[in-house]
Length: 408
Ligand SMILES: *[C@@H]1O[C@H](CO)[C@@H](O)[C@H](O)[C@H]1NC(C)=O
Ligand SMILES: *[C@@H]1O[C@H](CO)[C@@H](O)[C@H](O)[C@H]1NC(C)=O
Ligand SMILES: *[C@@H]1O[C@H](CO)[C@@H](O)[C@H](O)[C@H]1NC(C)=O
Image: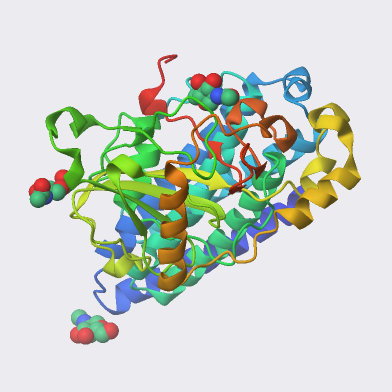
């Protein structure tokens, strides 16, 4: 796009975002405190996203991308560059909007991504996480916005974040559009995930405690998850704890015993995982989501169906085990996932089947991990039948948690 077009579009957006709230403010002493809280929080997240892509693009060369399995490094680099530009523009525009309401953006934040910028294979799933958390953050804050113009402007950002999300799904070998719904995340939930990257500033919102999945073997449907979180050592009786999984479109979370937190088959797309100290499911609706029972989390994971042809296009033949396209097509047919959203009834049945397979399978049921042709290979993604053939493995991407990283 020509530079002048970008500037024209930007100034149009700035005036559209910033104009009306100013008028309201002079006409009527509107209480903008809630709007400002959301705008300032969104601005910090956009700062984080901008920094993440800036640092990644600065650190990694063409050879780093090809080493991670991209047949043509310009494919991811072009997209990352474009996304970085969007995030930077969002940051600037949100800052102007905050100023137009008589306040100033939060400054002084430092963003340390050193633990996840070790190589492209580690960075790419984190980029995917960042985009999903970004989408979740805008959705989860929407009910707090009291000005419909600000709400519309925020919506015009979230649709773009969703495009980024799809690109990152594809670049990670995942399902481009994994579910019919995205998952709203409350600000304190967003900070449980993104908070460990941020230091040096206060966003005025208390983060929920971070949660880390500690399984080291590849995770798949049927795997029992193990966790680490700060308060864990002080909880003597873990039988009072639950593990909860919430995905877009589910009205309530799946609730499982903490000690039998088995990845169900039939879930697809990004999943938020929590530890709670009772069995009360978490509501999807962010306005009504009770967070008082959350002991730690959420952490995010991605459940992908069989790799799509589109994702294969971004990669070299060597990344696809056997490079057999017809084989992939067969796999797609045999492991097709019929539904991406689940009713409470379906949730119960998933729960039942997950419990049934909990003892039948173990974390070594990963015979097809090499067939997942995932990028990156270290991302713990797998797809296909379990080794005993009893369950369908939807695939799982383990996203590194900076809080637990020892390579800081
Ligand atoms: C501002 O508008 C609201 C309704 O939008 C009204 O209730 C309030 O009284 C107004 N305040 C002033 C100072 O005019
Ligand atoms: C459950 O956890 C929350 C958040 O840590 C805490 O405030 C609450 O007291 C806990 N409830 C019980 C029964 O342990
Ligand atoms: C899964 O991820 C963990 C954490 O990044 C890593 O230590 C482990 O080696 C990975 N496993 C596989 C099979 O890639």
